Image (tube, rainbow, N blue to C red; front, side, top):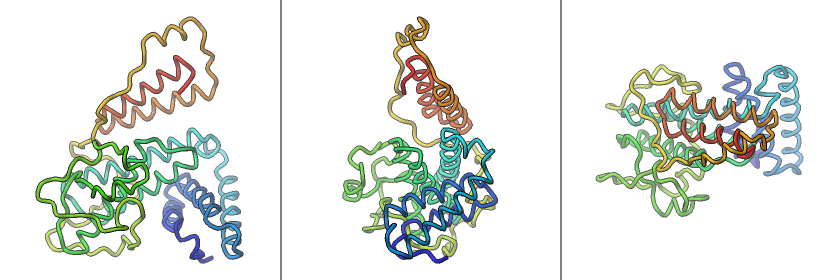
Length: 303
């Protein structure tokens, strides 16, 4: 069934779901769930939209029955961790390729796909500020590198500054973590054109990108599931400061004043899992942040 024009905003998420149908059904399920929830907000009254969304709901119900034994489907906390880890693996793969100056279709698609999966995380609740910035940076980078290759230009490797006016127009742009986007590098004359920045997805089909002579050929790594780089991976820039947990909070736990639920233990396990994933990429800052969150939860019963 064709996607109604009113629901065009979810087309890339549905395409990502289709691409992962067999590769990772959990990713496919949550992409469709996000598309359904977003589609309901866009237009649930027009007959063609309503018909499309009802069909999507039926598909989700069928998938939920098939995947009922999967913890990532039956437990939201596990599902959240699955999607976030998958999205950040793609982000780190693309970021490592970018910093090494290896520009190709797979890295562009990985940047963009990671931004789509960070959208999907909203089905579990509000995105963290860190994930908002990762999404913004990934979508902007995908657009920038794509436009450079399309125009026969060599992209600037690594983080470069986004246009100030564009940042101001971004949702939450005034509070952006500048560690993800340091000031413009000298000699870079690129200014994103209106509408090409991270506020909206590129409308181009990334599978038909022309790579000019001199640019690196596409890697063999599938963009949908990039493994860690074999080279010394440069981590995403670390946060300027790491939140600390007051040692006195341990007293409440030691005195037995904190009662933890099963959900609390599950969340603490999730944060420890995040920390372990971050250490695989030598991202010490993210590892510390997640361990601090786990410690605070276990000592206070609060996040």
